[in-house]
Length: 346
Image (cartoon, rainbow, N blue to C red):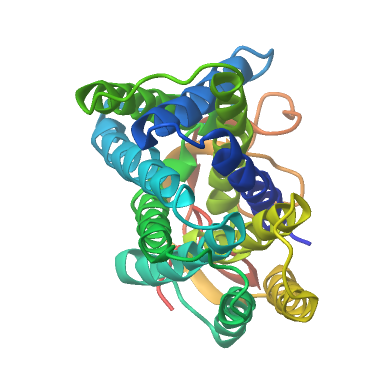
């Protein structure tokens, strides 16, 4: 399994596992308030991680030119998406909502193709179809939807589209320090959602809902997004989004465990399709002769077994480090993903 693929898979598990709990603890809570608590938790996670020894210099710092893009992804992914999800979760079942999140992978791949010309090869296409088919099979079986949940389901679809647009628009931010990106995005989203909650007259919940939703945000949005950005840096937006399609199955399985029983045969068949899709992605090898133009940039990198970072140092550094460095023009062939050095057209 590639490191980027593993990061994307863990990110999917962290996000998918929280969806049923957001539904449970968000019951009766306004959607803007729910979004504010989720991304307050995400920014709190990022702040704690940034305070850890050695966290500084993990990657290139944010620049002033990044803030318009940050504002865009915060609007899409930290306001529109969680508000739509929170509203939809109160009007459909946890299994249905979890499965519908699978559409994020479809939208991400299509938007990555449209905005960044990321290739969709036969293997990637089959993997995406298999994962989408797993969710569609369970939805078609009829046990996922709660009666009258059509509008709730549509709201969850809107959330997946907003998160997919966030993934595609925010791809250049994958080369920045993911902890700082999550901190900035979470803080912007939380502040905006608090303002909207006040404008719409939403009241704050009592009891365990506040810490529970904040914890869901820390794990499912803070930790998950940090891992997602690191994966996107390594393997590109389309492949990260497709592997992230495991998240709906994780959420649906937990929702089923919490009491939403359904037909076992469709669930097992869907599990097989998801496993097939993940296997196709994680075992994919993409290699061909390609050219690197001379470039100077700054991002996190390491030297052992990395053919792109052979520049000298005064003393060999240990592990990942960040500094401005230059790549000379090169033509070679080796297996690669759609990382910062392999965004050539196909």
